[in-house]
Amino acid sequence: QVQVVESGGGLVQIGGSLELSCAASGSPSRIVAGGWYRQAPDKERELVASISSDDRIDYAQSVTGRFAISRDTAKDTPFLQMNNVKPEDTAVYYCYVDVQTGDMRFRYWGQGTQVTVSS
Image 1 (spheres, rainbow, N blue to C red):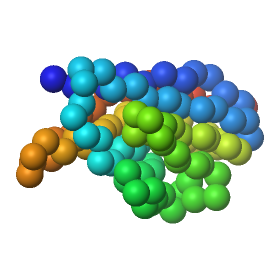
Image 2: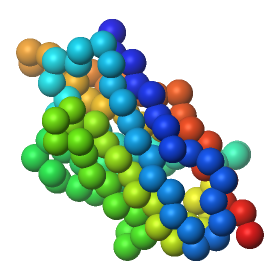
Image 3: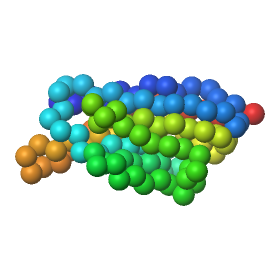
Image 4: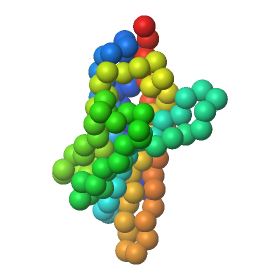
C-alpha cells in the first residue's frame, strides 16, 4: 500500500508564494504520473496541474503562468510552486501519484493540505 503525504500548505498573502511537496512511502513500484487537485468550499475538486514521468505537463487555465509543477527526479513525486496567489486559490490541495504495476495503474491520494490566501 502506498501512502501519500502532502506538506507545505498554510497561510499566504495575496501575491505571495508557496511551495507544496508530496511524499510517497510504501515502496511504490513505479510512479508514472502525479499531480495536484484542489477543492474549495462548496466546489467540486478540480485538477490544478499534472506531470508525467516523461515531463508532460498540464495546467488548469486558472493557474497557468502563476503555478509551476515539477517532480523529484529520483522519486517522481510532484512539487507545486504557487506564485502570485489569489484569494480564489484558497482550497484544500490534494496530491496524487499514479503507480504502474505490471499492466495495471493505480492512483493514490494524499489527505490534503490547506492553502489559505489572505489580504
